[in-house]
Length: 100
Image (cartoon, rainbow, N blue to C red; front, side, top):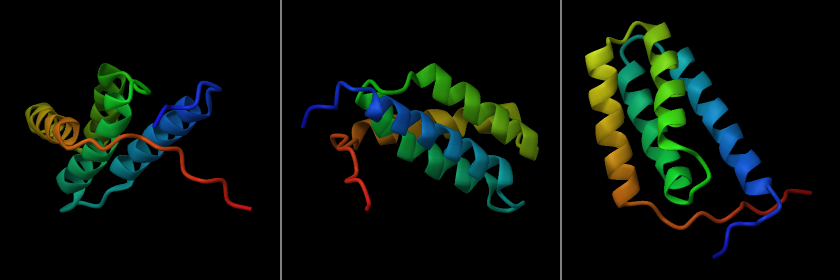
């Protein structure tokens, strides 16, 4: 399916990126790396659809993960793995239906 050209899809993707960053930032000790992995994997579909730039996703999630105390090497490895897996398994992006 085609991505809507009216900008709604880009706004939706950027909102998803902000939400993912907040979830990584708020992750509790013991779940931080798993949260980073899950959020990066989920955002890969927006990268595949051309709605988010990979470097923007990496930068925002790296900043959020650093703030939680994760180390740069761990962050980079997790992001690389999650994004590559997410891109391989990405399904076409379809805008969710508006809720009344």
